[in-house]
Length: 120
Length: 150
Image (tube, rainbow over all chains, first blue to last red; front, side, top):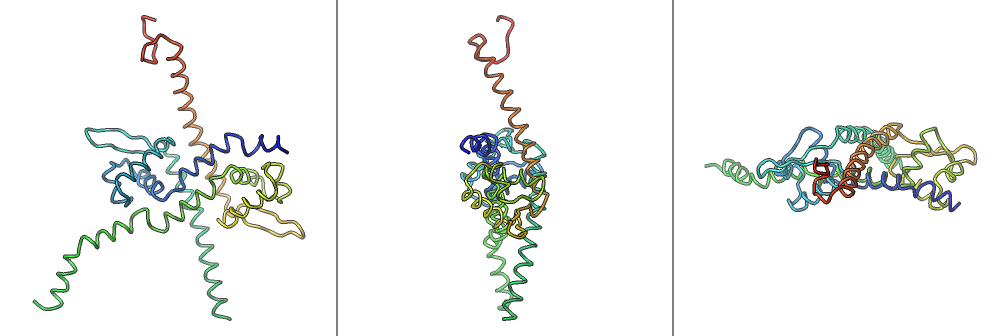
């Protein structure tokens, strides 16, 4: 059983995949990736859209860059960010489709709940 | 100037706070971004990813999942609970057996895209590693590329 454990879930590959999703599990980082799904953005352009302080944004951009999800280039004093791969945009699109289903399921639940509350 | 006009002027003057409001609406603080973040967080665990991969071939009972995931039954049911609450898994009771399956098969597509991103990212790292090794084994020059003098 111990050996099985070592062979399965603790394998570095599963840790790596878990870390990948942990990187995505942050509202500001998702917002940044959505903006970059459209096109390259300068940091100053992203600030009002993401709605967090500049220092905090640059921290989140560093996390995304370390995870190899975004790359940056400098032009004069402006730093531009873009997605490393179009797969990242695809990933967000699939996640949105799944969540839409999940949330509409919850809306139905909510309706049922309200109906049952009215009935009682 | 009528009261209404003054009121309107006052509202126009208070433009900046109104636009700040608009910015907040567009920002990452909106509940939808919290929901999206929570969704990814619910996938961010080695055992939960393994569970989803095992369910790719169809629904499984807990007993069927235990050897494949390789964690204790109590820990496994905890992880299954997280995926069920996130609406990623659904449960079907078949007599005495409880069977789990994914709510939306597009979750497999998501894992596949994630794997593709990780693969290309690792390929890039291993190329960097190879270049690093080459520069270490070469002459004490700073460039990883071999020069004619070597």
